Length: 345
Image (cartoon, rainbow, N blue to C red; front, side, top):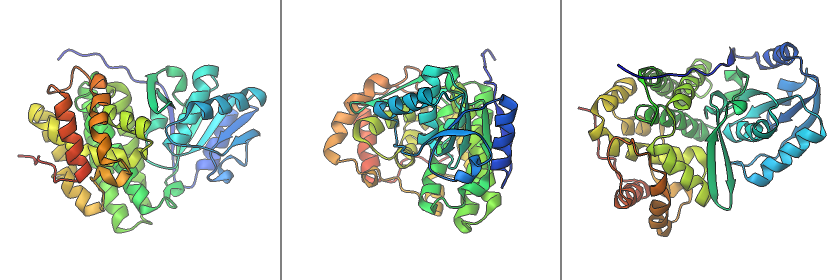
């Protein structure tokens, strides 16, 4: 074996019902005096710290105008710490502040998006999403509290969980993947899929939600190291160009990218299937996940344009070559919700 792996440094605090306690402890440990809170959920999480400003208006895909407003608020309030409480878009807006100011972030995720464990940022302007990596945007601390996910509706829980699965699957063959990423991704798939089944059987199952958070963290760590593969390149283009819902788009596209790449990466596909306990589409059937891209609001007449937009972003290291025709075929099947044509041996 010959590879290089970089592990990003980050403090992780995990415990149901302990978010407020952990946030207060981290603010004290970091010596922060002026906290900017981003997110409208769970104000009690930051009730014990010195909040100087709150930004509650958060939109998906982090529009540049929103980033500029958040940066201005951070500067005007002289914030020395950002605490984000919410899903991936909330974390993403906090990252936009950190990217230009260097102000550290304590992230409190309330979904399974995984952005809190990566040094990846994204901004959208003129219907185009730009992403990059910068260690300044990696939250210094992540506070996981499964109790904060109990109010997340079941359909969003499923979509967010499938988004975490997408991080894992893409990490199996992304440009910088290595054996450590693949091991983390496999365990992430096992944990998220098990947690999804538990939560869908009983939405109040805290153990299942903890399993999902654990798996989502592993997924994000693997993804942060391995980089964006074909799946994420497709979804970033679709999200930025057409304003599609992030998690639902990833959920819809994932089975088709897996079916496309699996024949050219049989070992990776076998590990995915083993961790899932079978076919991905069977898990979708079990938990009620949609693999119909039309359900996200994408118009059928946009598919050809989308294929053209995605092609320049396709990683050269993808397990099999990708043409514009391949992308149109993949997107068309996903839009219609056809049964993905792959099953593990």
